[in-house]
Structures are given as C-alpha cells and as structure tokens.
Image (cartoon, rainbow, N blue to C red; front, top):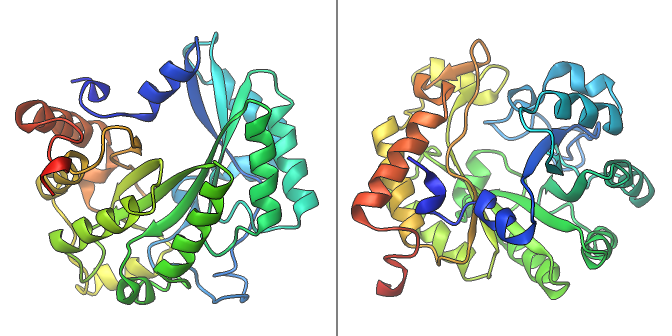
Length: 304
C-alpha cells in the first residue's frame, strides 16, 4: 500500500514543493561527534554505530564524488536531490569547514537542498544563520535534530549527553529563522513504553516542529547496546508492537507535520536484532494498512 495516501510523507511534501521527483542522497562529511571525542563524553550513544547508515567506502570520497556515485545508483535520472549529511554530528566543525562541505553539495545543479543531521547541543547561531541563508536562496533546507526521547532519565541512560531543554532551545532558535526542523524519535528505548512515546510526541509537537522521523530501536554490532542485548538486559519490540505504536503516534500528529520516515533498517551482519528490522517495507506496508483501516494522520489529533 502507498503510505503517502495516509501520511504526510517527505515524498508528498516534496511533490508539492517541486515540479519533478526529488530524492534524498546520504553523504558523509567526515564529521565526528562530541559524545565520542571526549568533549561531552566517550563511547557515544549506547545504540549508535555509524556504519549502520554509512557505506564504509563513502568516507574516502569527497562530497561531489559521493553524490555522483549515489546518483548513478538511482533508477530514475531526471530528478533532483537533497544532500543528506547524516553521519555523526554534521554541524560539529568550524563554520568555514561546514560551509565548504555544504557548498560542495549545492554546487551540483541537481541538488535542490540540504538535510543536516545533528545533535541539538551542537547547532550554534552561526550554523543556523548559514542554513537560513541557503533557505532564503530558495533551497529546501531541513535541520534534523536527534532527540530520540523527551525523557531526560532515558537520555541519561542511553548516554545521549544532552537533555530535552537543549532540544527545545535549538528548535526555538531555528524556528525564529523560519528553518524547517525534523525531530528524530526512537520507539522501544530501554525503560520506555507507550505512555512515554505519546508524551515525547506531545512535547515535540508543542515546540512546533515541522517534521518527525520515527525509528524502531534496533541493535547493531559495535554498539554498547549489543553487549547488553546479548547479556539479556534489553527487550526489543516485535514488528506488530512497533506498527501499533507508530500508527497511534501518526494519528495523533497534525496533518501538516511531515513524516520523513516511519521505519528503519540495517543489514546483517551489522544488525544484531530484531530480525524484522532487516527490511523496512513490511512494517511500512503494515502501517499503511492500519492507517487505512483506523484513520489517517491527524485523525485523532483533535481529540486530545
């Protein structure tokens, strides 16, 4: 089933914004993370292994080369692209370096905008102003902030290195410049259940974010959670449980909010568990069917 019939997906949003097809292409800007280099902490977030979303050979290529390689993999050629700086913290560098990385992407005439993945505690005003400048030039710009949960006790448990307050502060500053903000949320974090997910959604929506990206918690090799999972200290959601909660959150989200993603995947041998996260289309199809049967995005929002 087609998800964008029931959800305001990024694809639907881009169709309204551009006269042609637009796709995201992940690029690696060779960034690191303050939660790994000792500035904030070491070891990173307990769920993180950057190799789960970056191809190893990408790291040896420049931005322009990465884009050309990724475009060559696309089935459709007559389309535009959003350069997605995804790996690690893509605002964690001197402003001159950031401007160089972003500009390399935007110099490609087929690149219509940027998606910048980062932490909410690593977005100084210089970076916000730079992104706002690109947006004023007519580029599609999304600031993607990894929050995962609004609960500070959980953020501490997963060694996130920041609290909800930092997220709220950065969103307010970004919105004052009319930047589009997408919040990344993980369902299934240790110690959390359905009430936590709904509280997180409500707190994020109260900040007037423009987009949401939902992920099921999955355990990957090289992460701290991999050891905890093998020791039997972590329980993971089944696909049915995740689909049920994702549907519930989508239905309680205003229809104008853009869902950038409602599922995630990782391939073995990198993926440890759960096995159903090796493919993203089965949960996406199940979410679409559930929404078709019980109500589309926003159908339960006004009941709160």
